[in-house]
Length: 434
Image 1: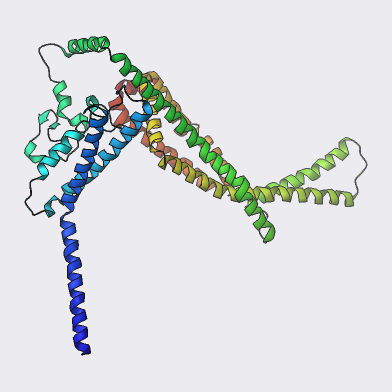
Image 2 (image 1 turned 30 degrees about the vertical axis):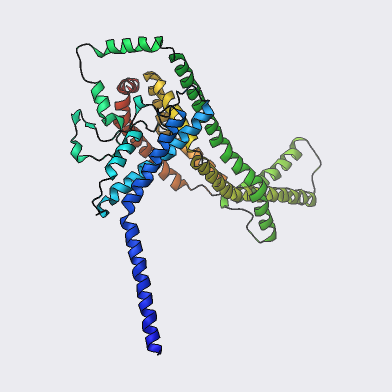
């Protein structure tokens, strides 16, 4: 009887495992369909926003009927849906081989998704841009001025504008010089009634990005600094001082602090003797000298005890400041992108002579002939800040290697990037160095 019950239980358990395996297998093989459906729904959501609020046109910052705040909400929604489409289409592309159903209905969905996505791109802050600057395109692509075989491409691919056919099409030579066409286009734009509104919208967006970049820069400086100072003053120093008062710990963290305290005490004793000789004061008794020396030693011990507590607290407070710095960057990617865009704009707007001057200034300060003295001062200051005795061997080894590495990185950056971005700046830099 018991054996039959065990057999029945084993049979039911096997059926359960079989059902679970089948359902898991079905769920896994439906991954392409599920991913494509989610991407399709995201594209439908974008299309709904366009139809209901933008007259069927793409969501753009140039729409005059909405304020900047409303436009920002729409753009963030579109950005979220575009990210969903991007990841879900990648998932569909990777798992397409799992779908053995032979269903070709996905073609219509892909075409619809392609039509929606082709209108948008991402700028440095993650917001959709106009179709004139579009970086994302689908099936029709160009590579090095040559047409790519469309049969080898998928509607899932997103490529950058520098590889798109639109860009190469604009570079084809025609019967008339392109400058004439650009001149007529400029005149047409200036005569357009909506050009002023578009210009104002562009100015508002630019001003908003600049404010965002400056606010982020201030946060990047103030938040870590305040976090470090406040945590040090109100949390770590009281805790460390309480621990040092209630436990037997060394008064001096390193031998240099002890030598400095002895030197200060000896200077005080010599100062008393010198004062007695110069001003003809009565000779101080040995007991009085010993009493004053004991008072001075007590004062020095309190001072160095506080300095030791500060040095230990600096380690924890600096760690808190680094965490605050990282959190500001992690939780405000839009501000980070705006700051990067502002710095890029400032650097590109500088003249070639100014770029060369800044590069020479930075290289001379950090890797120049006199830079070892500056590195030595910085490393000794950092050691004192953390309560560590400066190690001369380590400092000299650091000075002998790190500036050389920086100089190599700077030269590689000039050769690899600056020569492509601004060749005239490289030529100016070479002439100024000579």
